[in-house]
Length: 235
Image (cartoon, rainbow, N blue to C red; front, side, top):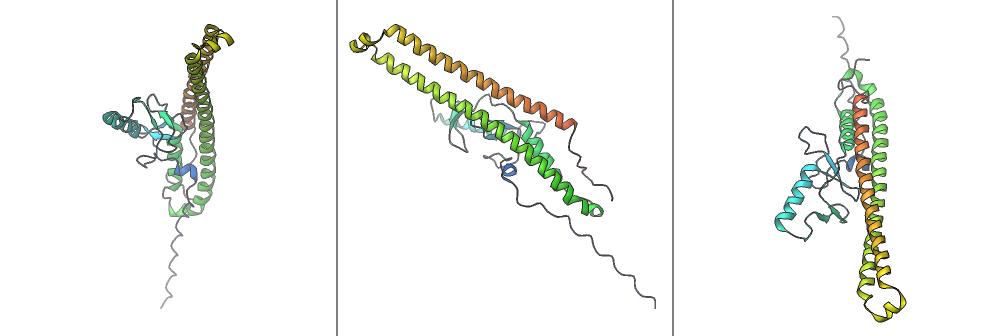
């Protein structure tokens, strides 16, 4: 009898990625724990708080509505961040579609590949993971840097405002009246407070412009997307 033909060995399964990086873990909303995505209805799009942390559009709206229903604070638009507990404004949050786009690119690297191209999968995943991490690092670092500047100016503005209130409350003292001219002192303090307030507004506008530019970069990246085919070609 003719010898039986040897049975071809099954192709090795595609190598899985290692433990997700911190940037990948932070690509999910801290409230609902779902990943950010640029969905057509916009509910999963990331929104940037002034402290630099991200929440999805749906959770930001629901969080604010819940606070308004219970009226837990006098200022209904300002509440602690769910991540760092800093008090931030929850209205008028700029979008950050770049994070959703990068998460989508990362998802492509985890998609199942054809067995015939299994040997190419680790290389493509490794290269793509490196590029995604670099892009995420850039987004996170630039957002944190801008938010630190905003918090610093807000803190300084509050300090100047408190000084102005203290000086105004003691201006009626005769000793203070003898030491400084209260009118000129009050005007000077008021001008300083107004100047700091103006600088905060300018920096907040720069922050929003920064996020707008990131979204423009997203559009450019979408037009020239990473070369990761959904179904890899035979090799």
